[in-house]
Amino acid sequence: MKKPTQKVIQFAAKRGISTTTLQDLKVEGGIAQYGNRSLMSIVFGYYNLKGERVNYKARAISEKIFKQEKGGEQRFFNEDNVLKSKNLKNNTIYIVEGEMDALALYEAGYGIDCILSVPTGAVASPTEQPEASRKYEYVLNALDQGLDQANCFVLLTDNDEPGLALRQDLASILGHGKCKYFDWADGIKDVNEALLKWGKDELKWTINEGLCDYPLEGIYSLDDIPQPPKIKLYNPLFGWDDKVMLGAGMVSVLTSFPGHGKTSFSTQLWTQIAKEYKINIGMYSGETRVRPYIQRNIRTFYHKKLEWEQSDSDKNEADNFIQKHFIFLNHPNNSPDFNFICEKLQDMKSRYGISVFILDPWNKLETPEFGKMSETLWIGKCLDHLTNLAKLLDIHIMIQAHPAKPDMKHGNSPPTAYQIAGSAHWFNKPDHIFSLWRPSFENEDGTRNTEAILNVCKTRYEELGYPRSLNLRMNLDTGCFESFEKEKKPKKKTEIKTEIQKHWNDVDD
Image (cartoon, rainbow, N blue to C red; front, top):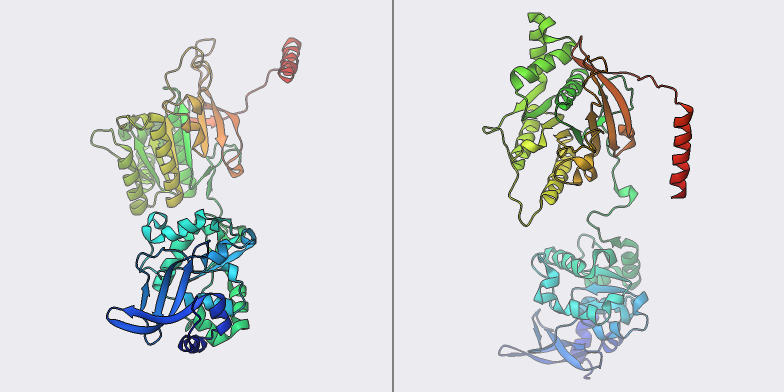
């Protein structure tokens, strides 16, 4: 290896670099050819693990121009010293943008086995897939040869747009979780400039004290997460206190067999909430016409009085309430697709400020032809999208969904979310799941039975209450659902004995 020439030593000294540093990092001096010009240059050697020089970079002393060996191997400058280190697994590796910056780090006291410089400088802008780009093959090769064992990488690229782009690309390849970075103060471009302005000791101390963890997208410590606002909760006002609450930014599902009253119940529930909280409700009613049926129901639930008993003044008052707080979605063929629903839902939020959207029922949506994507996967993706939309718009979305056709076994028990047609995601995805069920339509004496059971099948958050069964009945005098406490008959001794035996059988199993 040639020793650095006197001109190289003088050039380096002006940069704050000593002769010892030049020698330790195998920096040479000599004449390099730049086109038709021969210029005295400082020459940085690139060596493999066998100690063979596989490339060089020359920099003219008189002006800032560079050249590399034709066909030379692309690798980090000083990579041989780093990869041969016995302490590589515990080392923090400092990566800079130029060889002079690498010399400056060594001059400031950083170990020779923890300094690297990229061979080709920075890029103009971040690369879309840097790990797949040929310009970064040298990084992948170094990782394959053992650089991946390093404990941490500190990215000390230049303080300009290309330097920041290079930093982003390197972090993407090396792994954001293993990377730290340092932001230079205004007026400082790179490590070598900082060495000249701050001195050796100040440079090392400032870098070590100012290191920042590279941000991890989607991963935060507790202090990084802002305190969210309190969840807006709506009490459905059936006299259940806070046993059942509905929250903004959430998705709920109400299921029921046909004829069990889910449309009437949900209309009453949201009419009561709209009246109490002065909020606006968006609704798609695919099976029940808005006029006269939805209008009649809301009139009834608003006054808690049957429509035929209401005066014209009562009806006008209720209609004004509907006009102010309910916005209805219509589709020309009454068979909208999912994208139509989502688009119009956002329009309702923008124009009318809705706080709730009711989709009644799901099976009126036009479904795609299922080929590569199954129905269950499609439903799962739709529910994920609605969940994100509910959070983004800060609204509650209630979906009414039919169970699959009941068989003799399931027809005599309340439907569950797992029985909703199309997918088990009906249970997995929503925040809140309700099941409305009427055990009997007729009493033993032949009179009409109006009792029903609302099963709260799932609540994702404790603010919403807990899974439970609640008793409802339709008050035929008012046309409204109301809650009631069902009298519990005392159990016979034989029933108690059977339950005890069943308990111990379950324990044994």
